[in-house]
Length: 426
Image 1: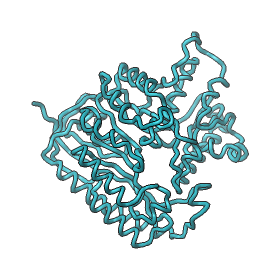
Image 2: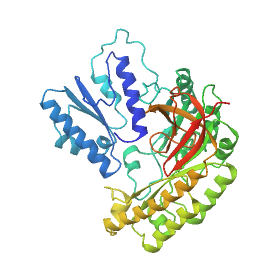
Image 3: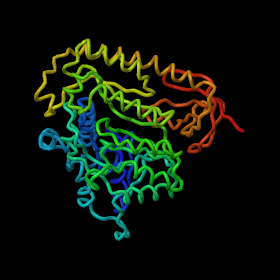
Image 4: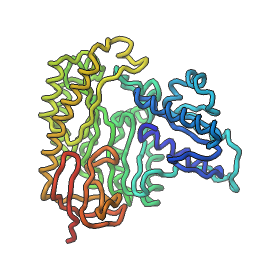
């Protein structure tokens, strides 16, 4: 359940189960077997509810004799372990986000050769074989007012550069071409281990490994952004001209309440510099409506910000108070839910119009597309500007191209969240 960072943990667990002699299935539609492990999300209310509902469904399946034992790991159990143990006694084993290796120790060894323990970063990919998420750090030191992540993951902790490079070399040797680099806070990479920013150094080193075709960056933080990264993005051809940087808001009173440690003027200056130093970059951001302190004036400022900045990709959500966060303890959640949702709808309507205009500008242009699947005689893929699952896809009409390979595509039609094109062979 939850984010791509959880997915990486699940992939590592799968590798260790395999090494211990167990056969595993990931995300089965109809779970079976002597153990079912749920990797939970505990970030926001809807995600917590989804995780709990799945555990309860598995408890029913257990009572019906369809599965054996249930185990739970991840962010939800890290945050609410005592309460969950009491409320769901059907679960046989509970683990948090960081001690899931104990599940391996709790199982009998069935491997013929138990001497070949996986290296710390080894995993069985659940993504397509040409694409992988690459988690470079865990945790966050920012303590934004609305966010529970530091309460779950703890302080920011970077992985050593050489360990990450060993992982990339291993994955490229197995056919991975696309690396989606992820962390709770990319901008802080290296500060805890090396005493200074090392994201640019890391990305440059990854880009020089043979077989790495695309490197895409997710979840940068705007305050204290590592500006030397922009030179690497501009100069290295396999670093995608794409940056996922969550901004949350633009009105200074709201940014102050959010404890974002950045002003509107600094945010706009940063965006200008990113675009100046990396021509053609596509920026993805996330924004929030209805946070305490957002009156109609502040929301109109947010709307104008979106109209002016014309983000290539944008997600948004309405504020929902989370247990034990700074805002839950110190700010009144006084904006009615219908107002939050109305503002969210208005914001996304503006973005949909912008997205269509930006896509229409691509008609007649050629893009390098990674083919991912076939549908009704067409090929479906993504460009360097599109992250898996969250960004638009490109429909290549009338041809079924090899999956996992790149194709040259001329864009012939634009929709708000989709492009249509034809395969070009020169």
